[in-house]
Amino acid sequence: VSLTPQAKQVRVIAAGPAPADCIKQGEVSVSVKDNVSLYERNALKVRDELETLARNEAPGIPANTIQPLADPADGSQRFVAYQCGGQG
Image (cartoon, rainbow, N blue to C red; front, side):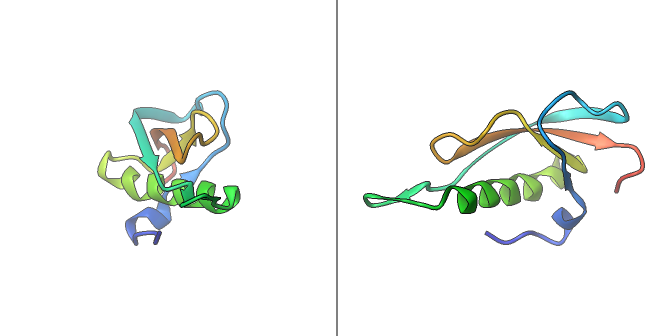
């Protein structure tokens, strides 16, 4: 999964309370294959790909910051997308 040029400006913040200087723009749901045949894929690689996909979606919302709502589950993850001051 490749990061698009527009997504390079999108930052990822840790799960937790909404940032004070940000306006919620919506939510992003992304998914990748978390297993191939009978083999589980590396969890870190899956998490990285999910984050990249969410960052790729953010500029179209438009948002410049994403925050995971929960840990990945079964190759899927949801993120909150924000437009934050001083970014973008």
